[in-house]
Amino acid sequence: MPLQDFLLPSENVKFYSTSLVRYGIKKYRVLITDKRLILYAQRGYIIKSDDIVSEGLDRIQGLEYSERGFIFRMAKISIQCLTKLELYGPISEINPLFHTMQSLINIGQQL
Image 1 (tube, one colour):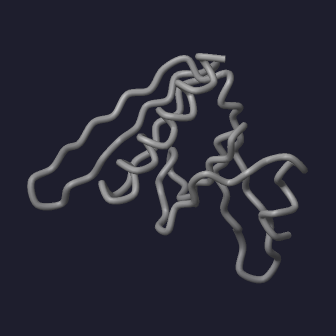
Image 2 (cartoon, one colour):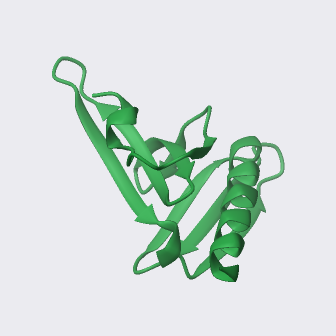
């Protein structure tokens, strides 16, 4: 099933990752809309199935960003909602993701 089938009718995509980001032991593509954070992956070689994690931006209470490593530099975002989501990936992917989420959350809190 294409990812567009999981979007709500009035959702607009603000960010789409080009590389995979790790959440737990699985890897996902990250999609941020004006309403939700969506982690998306297709699993299976023969029988395909969709693996989706979704969290509303209005439920996010806090964000933390950190980088580590000297040669193999990686970044981490900790997202505090009802549960804590920790996303790991390359700095080139995680840094824009963090800034996009930060701007959307700040806009939502000002309204």
